[in-house]
Length: 268
Image (cartoon, rainbow, N blue to C red; front, side):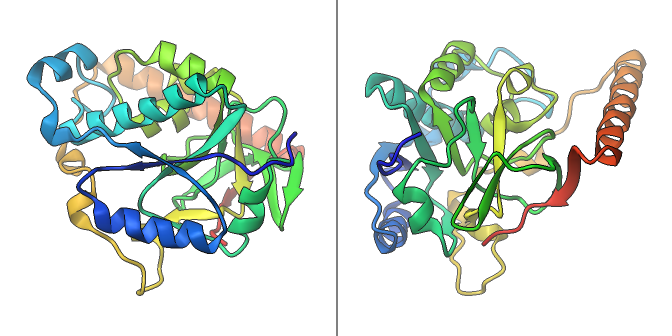
């Protein structure tokens, strides 16, 4: 536990000056200082870099250059946490909106569970499985265990211990960074202790319903929606279906016992 402000690492492309200005204003309104992490520009990736980092197709097919650049940018943030010997830090992408209690949550790390590897602070408004009991509460936000996939990686806290593990495990990768961190099919994700803040104090601009929010399509990861998922053998498909049925049954049983709940995490 800590009463000092949560360190913030903001991932931002050198050419995305408008995004940086918006985040400076939003974080400034919260009284929060941050360190900018220069993002890896997909346009500058050489074919050799791509081949060295990405050994083949992932779950959703071959990564796009944008997805690779995004992953390498997050690795830069994890490396900073280790190099600066920070106990943890909040990693933000430069297209997030901050909730009403953002200033209170950033002001202190008292809410960070001692056993946490990651705490997800955003929502993608899809149903997820959560613990029925909170381990911490701060400014009207509960911190609960996350027991299902919850995509996107625009706002999450990562500890120094976890950052070391993530760096060691991702010198090469086949899936996007949010798939590796927050999808239950990822062995790396399953090995981590992950919490969710509920309600979420961050959300990406393009998922936020306020018409005044700004979304820059040119800054999104191009091409990922059009990827063709690799074919799977009938046996692999059957195993995946059976695993899903078993997992849902187990989650449902724990729900009946009052230990877990299925919910859509709101933004506030």
